[in-house]
Length: 263
Image (cartoon, rainbow, N blue to C red; front, side, top):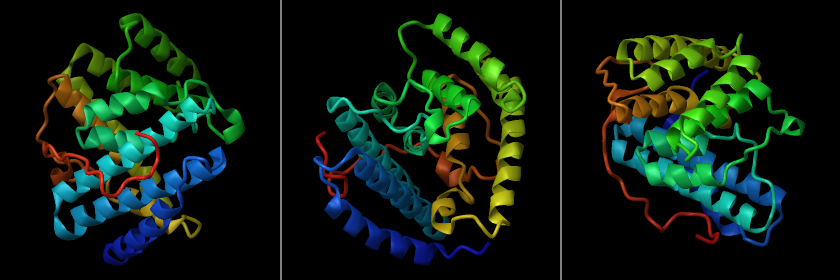
């Protein structure tokens, strides 16, 4: 699959002008979720294109922040209206916020994210359990280790065959064992790579949805950020985690280009 990121960036900028103009807080839940998800995808494409084409880490982090804040506003609005949030596994905006180092924004996204498994939305139980466990590491709740123990046990039950590498990674993160953490991270990255290359070679893959994730692994960068926060450092290079995407840079989220929803 050949991707022209310059063209994708132009298309995303044009699409955002239209999307941001039509999102209204009184729209239906279905319309809001659809359109804000599309906004996040376009911001991610802009950010990844700036990173890969121009080497602009600042624009990468800025657009990840814009996507995260747009998603947070959607979740907060749905909560205020008493409506259910999107499935927990719709977590790319959250992972992007963590990858960009926006920890307070990530905490607020976690606060309003789904807490119930939604099989009716084609959400797999092991994916849901992993999403909830990962959120616990991003923004721990007051229950502390007891809650984490329970979430790990849930994932061990539902994802024993599918999430073994992630379970090992979580255990290493809890113990702050750098060697075990990066060993498990590499195993997880290899599995991500197999899935990514399979999608890249499939004629049925949606190019626009896949583009920002072809060469940049948001979850992987977020996991490395979690490791850094726990004092686990590595200067090794990892495919799908470009070095420029891993630098530390404080990039405030501007108010000029966000969804027009209550803050």
